[in-house]
Amino acid sequence: MEETFCSDEAYFTTASISTWLTNYEMPATYASAVSTSNTLYEGRYCHNTYSETYGSTKACRYNTSDANQKVVTHTYEYNSKVVRNYSFLYDKTYKSALWVAYATSNSGDFKDNDVRRNEAWAYDPAIDQSWQQNLSGAYSSSSSSSGLSYDRGHQVASNDRQTTVEQNKQTFYYTNMTAQYSDLNQGQWNTLESKVQGVATVTSGTDTLYVVTGPLFEGTLATVPDKSGVECQAPSGYWKCLMKCSFSSPGVMTDAVGCAYLFDTNSKNVAPTVTTIDDIESRTGFDFYTNVPAVLQTAAERQTYSFF
Image (cartoon, rainbow, N blue to C red; front, side):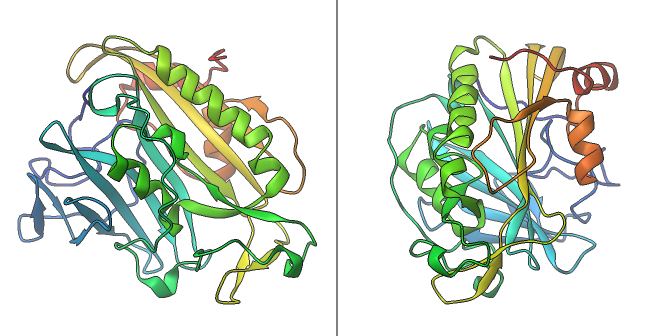
């Protein structure tokens, strides 16, 4: 289905300002306010825009209260309109996105057209290259501090973005990657991604699956060199939150169900723990799905709904 946007009021003091961050799964407090004096792109404001490496659209960047963190929304064109691909909070210190948020279904703007995996590895045009890991090739796993082998692990999976070639290629920006234990990336993490894609495939009508995924950086972290020899911190674990929402009409949500999945390690190929969105929020300090109506949000975030 076409992505449904809700009021900007939860994000910005001036509710009349339209932005690219007014989506149901997004945290409410991580982007600084914008005004009509800022950059306007496709009817929505942001602090800066950058030409996408793939496609003719632009990426929109927002400043935050932390000088070392930026929020970015990538876009693509489909059926002659500009569509949000995914959004993320990027951190300079960890050289990683701390969360990545996106909507998916099997129709409308997110229809699965089977464009395949395009292997279009590239720096993200919306984030300074000095902030990013150089992932023009594989991690130097033989030099990792843990002795483990690491892959360039997607946060938004390539298979989650199969509508257009350009949409898929944007999942290969280095900002969408973390150093993920190879056996986990190719094993249980891949299994979970496939199950999420299966949920998206069976959504119908006005149903939309909203996903937020991210790494954990807790305790003593292993490091692994990127292609420039820079030591990059490997996450200690991963999580993925799901909320499926139904609408009676655009912007009128009638139902929401939720669940979350936690990988408490990045050094073993183990199945995730089934938990609640509330639990992941407590663990990470983030507050997701803030634009979902309060009654539906509260109930869904306490659930361990059986998606698969």
